[in-house]
Image 1 (cartoon, rainbow, N blue to C red):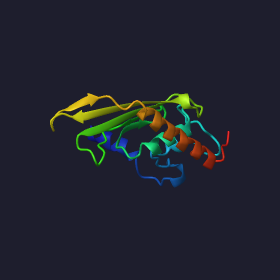
Image 2: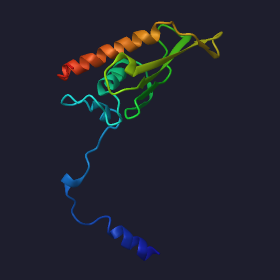
Image 3: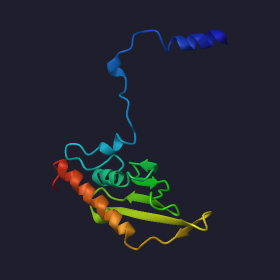
Length: 152
């Protein structure tokens, strides 16, 4: 058994490797979302790269729980504004289309308040909160597209 294991491992090492044949390391979170190069405004998953990057940039003040560039889903963790000990927010952003349009992004904003300094309770968010954040994301996405020379 030991001879088989040593024989199997001998094929793994030894000879010289050609560094140019090795894959380049990639940051899968930041590397993929920068797919908008040379006017290309789509990621491999079919979502608009400018909207994706605009959402990441706009929501960067909140801790990220997960971000899936191919699926177009960004989930933040709870964020507690510095001036408020009894209120916190969470956002789920969905990029729905390949085009840079206002209906290509959907946000769900969640708010909780602390009851008597203890438990968190779900509470309604101001009606215009999601619309305001969406407008900022769209503004950032258009700015990124303009910076990239994609004035479509």
